[in-house]
Amino acid sequence: MPTTVALPHQHLHTVEDYYLMAETGILKPEDRVELIDGVIVDMVSIGSKHAGVVNRLNQCLVAAVANRAIVSIQNAVRLNDLSEPEPDVALLKYRQDFYAEAHPTPDDLLLIIEVANSSLNYDRDVKLPLYARHNIPQVWLIDLNADELWIYSQPQDGTYQKKIKANLQQPVALPEISGVEIDLSALF
Image (cartoon, rainbow, N blue to C red; front, side):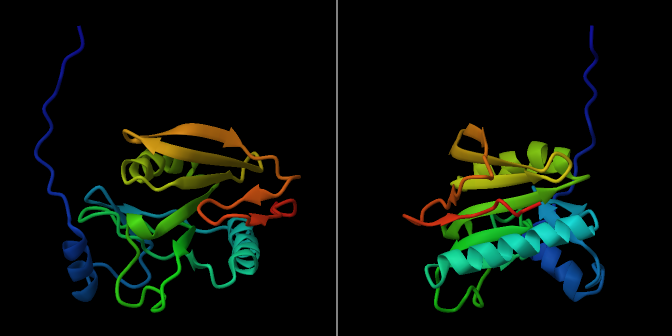
């Protein structure tokens, strides 16, 4: 019979706490961290293949969306008072201030893209459910180990109801922007 062990109460950090830690020097500018469900999580270093894929995505997306959306690279998105992840790419609703007044929130997000090598399990098992709980319409998970793009959509009850492996030899449609597709055949 399995035994249940009660864990001590954990102190969860708010986004406000997180920013205060940065302002006071507890978190340094060079620290690669993000706030996930009240926990400050170290982010994995970015390798050259990862950086190259993000750069290609940036170029493809900027050309495709022109002034219809904003492409945000490795910047924070504020999901709630306990979560402010920094996805590799976020496609945002267009705003005149380019989000200078405040980080984007779930209502501003059209698409999140996570590029994963050693972080694949974390991105799939922790960040995808987080995005689904906040009703992000679509998340792309790029698996650098297998050179695959997985598209998750239809968030409901904390999970994505639809998961498909993209055929990168065909253009991939962007969510929430009618008639816009991008060619990702040279992604890897």
